[in-house]
Length: 591
Image (tube, rainbow, N blue to C red):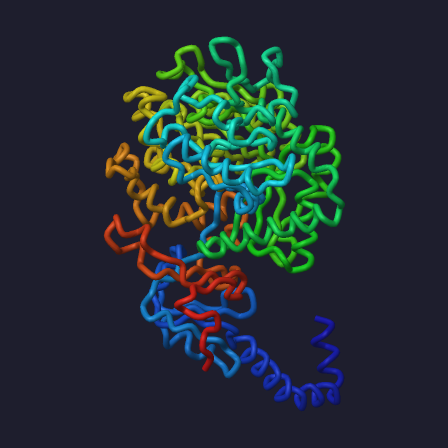
């Protein structure tokens, strides 16, 4: 009111404002026109947005790191200026960037520096790989590999204990170099005699809580270490690496980050939920984010820290979109059990093929409860690894008790990581508690052939990978790969949720399949929701980060069996083309 009276009482000021009005209008118009110009445009494509307000379009305009507009070719053409880079999609599919819902980022990078055991068809194949590595290894150097799985071999090893090999043949080909070969699940390792000697493992050694040193009939260690028993050789390996300088360690860590990023970008991954890193690794991520050198967006779960350190440091490490949206830390990772393949998943009833065991509880209920109480006090999300039916039930019990004790804390979006084997009566509890099922479609494909052997036919069918049951009960289901347990390829995991077809062509419990639209949502918008980032990521929507993937084939319409044949042509993160397939060229044409 005062401003109106003042202007009316000052004619000269009113005249000055009138004189300036055309200039202001021109300036605003010029600014709006400049802001409407795109830095990058994708045109002439099929854009599946995962945005219910506009599910499909032909073109996208990007300004800087954000999506400017989505629409028809004609709609977007007006945003093209002289400096705009234009990619003609030629009818190809563009979708939101894949968000890896559960993986191990540094593990992915480290896997590029180790023996790849995923393609081994027999134990003898692995022994030959180690023999070759030993010939070129320096004296005392550790030989490291990952990816073996006894259930995938063409024939069982001879001799064997509980279906797994013994170390004699491995020790023979590498008598002077310690060897540690991690199971595909990450929940067991096989080591040779030299590694056991350095770790002090003998027939008298007792495993740590939550672990097992497998022994033969004579009581001698076979070389198989389950769950926490792996820490014994892990500590020995860490001691051998203490001679590295700080500069050498930093250079290696940066190389690992870069290798993980290269692999992820080549597969269309623009954001990654890192399932557990300590504060030191988070410090590295923060430095790289500040330098603009994180290849993709990371949502990191705090793991491996004491309760005292977390209570003190969690507020300091809380980051929401740090470094222009590249680094978020607001969750912690816990682990209540192991993996089914290594008999570490915690079950309500014994294993069908190992009746003496119901698996391993890797964290006590008391400890998980303490972690949950700590998290809710600091406003952190809890993401708990739970694979077996009992592990899932006990985790839900802990969450429920903590929620009841803190009724004022809402929209906490706590998660169960994997949720692989769930007793159907527990499914409604996911929905009532608002718990997210962070799952991996590719595990269905890999695990289906041996699930009946571990659980029995009926239990395996009733409980395993309940994608449809969870979805239909209103549970938020996400997708990922658990890389390096599996390859990081989202297309394979997307196909796993849609088809559930194993390598021999068998469809595992087809009634649990998701539609393609649901599976795409699980890999994009649902993963964004699971990290509280649905306002920034997960759909091709104006205002969100311009994270987009262009594929060689339309995975939404091609015959189901052909989905895995699609290839990533472009991966765009924050409006920058960070990956371009060789056939597409690395520099889009401009006009």
